[in-house]
Length: 177
Image (cartoon, rainbow, N blue to C red; front, side, top):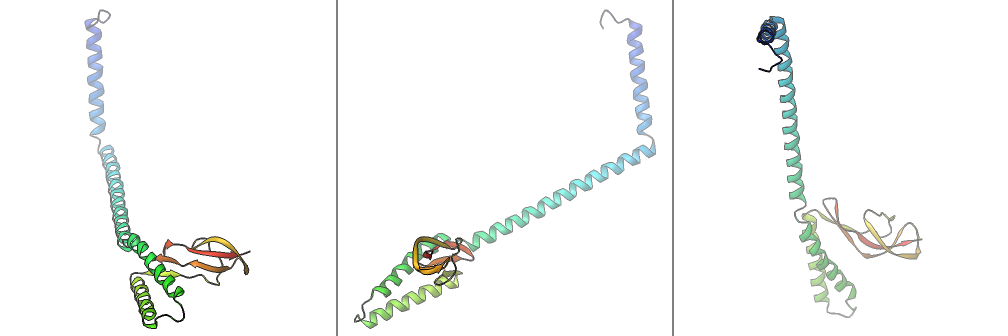
């Protein structure tokens, strides 16, 4: 107890605190106030439950989407490395002289066709834009072709490929000016 407070003032403070506590108890025991408080708390609980359910639903959908994408694009790196094999087979076919061994050329062509068929089974498709309009999303312009119409692909230097709609490699082309 401090020197400025007298024993009577301490008693007055204690009595005032007890009266405030009794009034709070009386207010809390009022049925209308209690029912309003209960309704407010129930609304808060329902809101929290709804938010938790929405968060869980969004989480499940995101996990499903990420899992589907992981399955869909799991072959991306492997497929990208196979594209060099396809390119080399196409170069071998194009470079074969006219008087070459026809059986060997047929074998290389069949191997090329079998590889392309296998790639298509795994949703890898060829982007061959010869004669089409230039599309910067799928084509990479590496030069100008003076003989091609403006904005059109002139020569295809290297075909492009996509995996399930996602670009693996853009087609390297020359474009008309």
